[in-house]
Length: 239
Image (cartoon, rainbow, N blue to C red; front, side, top):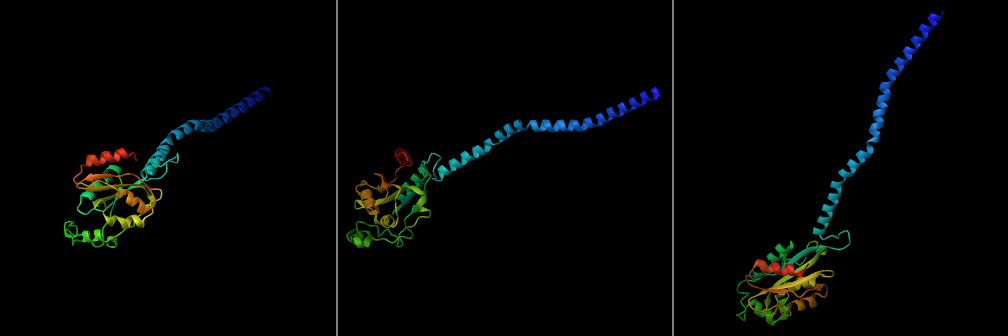
């Protein structure tokens, strides 16, 4: 009986050992799961590293906002959008306006009279020419434009106004645009082209006509001005 009892106890011990072995696989899986769980802080570090491109994306967005004229994070606007508005009778002002647009990355807006000026109209040596008649009669200087409305006007912070000099003042086709728009909150910079006359009081007169905006002194360019000279002037404005 004692011998049989000893064999029975040995058999039970072997069965328990076998049960413990089969449970070790399950226990091992549990340990692997715990290890995987314990690696999460390292994975979090990787996630933190992975979030860096998103932060870079935020930076890219901020740069884009600056380019679009929106406020930067500190509430200051780094330049805003720029518009170059111009009337050109013979192409000289148009050329200068193009150089300003290239230097600033700004948009161009040409002022076009509904009744375009012909070469004969622009002959100031002929007393019967259109410009001479308009010069002598201020009522005839109200030149109707094809368009005096700029799309998304409120988004522009800086506005250049270009024109040729006629009898010491700004060519009057720009007058309609000046009176039709509100320049509040905008920096306005006049520029002109002429063979010999300077800017004179043309910018001041336009400022008075506008009644709004922060107007700077402006600049006069000779016909055939170089792009380098225009760019140097623009750079010197510190916009």
